[in-house]
Each structure stands twice: as structure tokens, then as C-alpha cells.
View 1 (cartoon, one colour):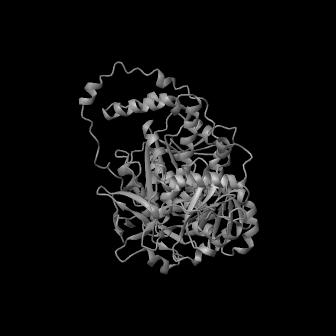
View 2 (cartoon, rainbow, N blue to C red):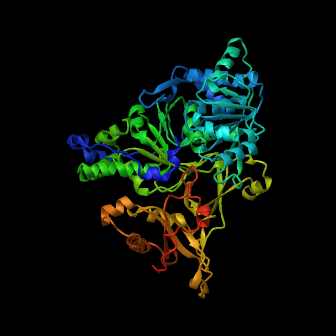
Length: 637
């Protein structure tokens, strides 16, 4: 699963919902409901946290779950598009971890190996990561989208002993294997190739290890895990020349579980739908380790083109996603409702069910059953993280009865620093500080916004072999300086308004956060995607008295489908630019004067992105506009 990294694929996502009959809403009978009596009934709202777990290592909770939920499904995966989901039980997963770990330590004779994992989401990835965390060594999850030269660099920087790769990465491994001298073994996922020199299939190692275990060797299960020892190395987004390796301990990962269980209730009957790349801590920790700690299951998505049929078949109860995917689903569902001429009915029933819910009667799942059925029938929780989301999408999900939560954190916080409690949802907040955390806001501006700094047991051990960079982000009191700008309210909810590294500072000291403007631009139908930045004056502009003032510039990718739908076909580039500029002027009316966009650049192609679909701003800004962008507007808003 890698298309989630490609925003163009998401923008053109072919999710075609059938017409929504909405019979469940039309036929709902409210005649027997005494609204006056309900209104008098006090609705108690939970304020205290749930009892939290107190795990110290991943091995601790995984072994507990394997024993308690032996026959229950842990991971569900489709062998191919035509075959139904295959269930791997906790007992089977545990046995494979024991066997694979024994093979690494006894057959390959590697102790505390550095195990680099690269590939799309599949059982072999989960098995490799869990085996490393349970005692085989240090896990190094890597973005499968890295070009060969960067993959080679990461292998060498991490000094990997073992590289576990998916079949789709076989060519990359062939291209670089002569240039990675520390690697002793190349292990191919989902392969039973025999051990031949450096090469072997993962299935082969599992069988070899199983034979050793069956002979009576239980040494792997007896490996003791130091909770505070360096056990995961994850490189931050960016090219390998400037990416930083984040060192993570078992305790930091376990504390994520302890943090979430205090705020969110998950049951062994829950199933999480895995659609995000596993090399990112958001998915590997919250999308994988969390359900493994609670006896829940994970269903693997085959890819974006299969997302809807996979959801309908696997029937998940929870979905972790980035905002762009959630907003896409929201738009597609609402397009289907409009095509069915049911928009007025849905709006009316949202208003009615909201009133009933306030009075203590929640009938949303019954009323909006047709929508739920298209999403598998059991979806109750959606979590958004990694970037700001349109509040409208989150509010709408809540309106139809889905619990909408937001999480906040960075790779350096492994990742959770804040998450919305399911008993106190707040659309717009990035989440509530986890109960173990302390936080402070420094260098506040006139609005009380400043850099958010967090002290929590989920924070990294430091940057790998880079003490200088570690000191830049960790202060003497143990607070991690996130680089994110925002504020924290009296109840501990975090609100993010921008990124300090992205901030545009005006000559009179005003701070402009591009994300705030981009959220408005991205609501414009004619705009597919946007990036706002402060541009150095050029040419005649550079000669003006205010030449030091950065020009607020919007670099925009047009939504050609919407433009043709709204304005007709056969438009020239200049006509398209004029259309978008006119829409930008409407956006400027919603902004304070100094934040108004002054220039427009039209971009062809796609923005370069990180694995969580954040624009690599500095790389994009450094690029020269293409020929169609050179003629930027010099109009004032």
C-alpha cells in the first residue's frame, strides 16, 4: 500500500458510491419519542479518564495478548484481489514471531541485529517489526518510496545487518547490494527461497526457526527487554543528506498504548483498517501495536483502488487516516447523497438526531444506516492526524454518528503527544495532551500563540549519532521543542496554528502561518492543492522602499476537472489563471490585510511530499517555477 503517499491519486480517487436510498432516514419513526421528557432528562458527560494500562515494553503486551486471545484474529490480509481475507490468529502470529526470532538469533547467529524493513504493508512487515521489538534487535522501518540512492544511504547510515524487503523492492536491492557492506543477509518477504549465501526467504527462516523451537529451544522467548534501550530507528522525512534518525525505546512505544487507553475505548471485537504506510510511527504504533495490545485485529488495505471493496469486506470499526483521505471520503459520500437527491433529507435528519442526542437518545446509526452499510456496517471511529483537517469534514462525521478524533505528535514523540478523548470530542483541536505529558508554550505572540514544547515518556532518546541536533530540540528541563506554533487551553487541548519553520514574518513583526491560508484555498473547487510562502521581491519590486517585505505568494495546482465543469472546456492557461485569481481575491476578503495573497503561481504536476503527505516546502520553494509559472501575477489583492 503506497498510493497514500501520492496526493494526486487521492484527488482522483475512484470511489463510486451507489445511490443512497436513505430509506433508513425516511422510514424512521419518531412518533413514540417524548421529546419534552427527554429534554428534562439530565445527560451526564464523562470527564474523568478511563483506567489506563501500564505497559513497559511491546513484548510484555504482545505476549499477554497472544496468551489471552490465542484463537482470535490478529491480522487479516488478502492473498490476492480475488481471494477473501485470510485471518492470522494471535496464536499463529506469536508462533511465527518465536520462530523468526529464533532463526535470527540461532540460525543466522545474529544477536541484537540492526534489522532494516522496507516494503508495502503485508504480514511479513508486521512479523519483522514485532520480532525485532520482542528481542531480535533494532528495527529500522524505511519508506518504500525512497529512490535507490537514498535507500542505500539509509542502510549504510544505520549500519544494518539484515535487510528485509518485499518482492516489489527486489530490483532496488539488486542495484545497491554491492554498496552496503554492513549487510550480512537479505531476507525477502513472502518467499521460501532457501538460504544461499546472503539471500533467504522469510518463510524459510520461519520454518528453520520453528524446527529449533520444536526441538526445545525457548531462548528467544527468554530474552529480556530493557524498556529504555534504543530499539527502533526511524529517519525523518527529507533526503538522506538532511534527514535525522530518531532513536526510540520500547518504553516510548508502550507509553503510547498507556496514553491512548486512558482516552479511547477499544475492544477485542474492534478491527482497525490499515491504509497508511507502516514505516511511519503513526500507523506502526497506533494502527498496529495498539490493537495488538488490546486483542483487536488489523485488516490490510490492498491499495487505494480497492479501498471501498476492502472496507466493505473487512468491516472495520476504526480507521486511522491523514486528513486528505478523510476529506476525500467525506466529499465522495456527499456527492453520492446529492446525486441521490437526498441532501435535504440528510441535513434535516442530522438536525433532528443532534437534538435527540443532546437529550440523551442516540439513533444516528439507525437513521444513517445506508451510509454505514457502504462503509462496512460497523465503522464507529475515525482518527485524523499528521496535518490540519477541514473542520467541516470532522463535524459532518460526528453528525452522522461516527466518533471523530484527532491525534497530534511527531516522529520524535513516537508519535502520540495528544489525542482527543472519545468522551470529550472537540473538532478543531489537535487533541488533548496525553495524561503523562507536561507542556509549555514559549515565545508567545500578542495572541498567546507560541512554540509548543512537550515533556512526555513517549519522547525519543535523541537523534542518532547527532548530539548537536538533539540539543537544538531538547532543552535542559527535558522538553522537546516541536517547532509547531499554537496554544493550549485550560483543559489541555492543543490548537495548532502553524509551523515555526514555515512562518512568514512581516517587516512589522507580524507572523503569518501558511497553513491557515492554505486551508481556505483548498476549499476552492478550482484549486486541487496549494502552498503559500513568503517570496523575496524580484525585478522592479526589489527596488521599492518596501523591498525587504516578503510577498505572500500562493503556488497552486488547478483542479482541471472542476474548472471544466464550472467554466467550460477549451480554456487557455491565462483564462484558468484568471479564474483562480478571482477566487483568491474572494479568499483574501476573509483574511486580515497583511495576510492577503499578493501573487499567484500556477504549478504543473504535483508537489513533492513526505510519506504523510506534507509538502516539502523548502524543496518546493527552491524549485524554479516552470515556464507557465514564470509569469506570476503582480496584482495586489
